[in-house]
Length: 73
Image (cartoon, rainbow, N blue to C red; front, side):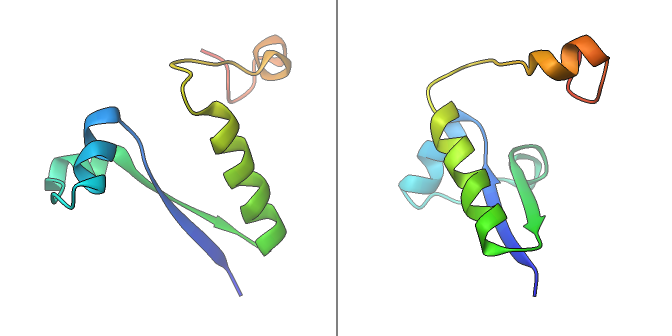
């Protein structure tokens, strides 16, 4: 069984969601991402990581930056 979660990114879009205002189609495409996990434990770890990131505007993963991996800019 797959475990999925949808995440809404963007301050304005989060506010709209909290006040039950519908997002536009463009906002849905740009700001709503769906993630799938093979276990609930993976999903909960992802949620914990997102909670840790709340309030930060930017971040990097130095390990990936050094390796030139997927997270590098």
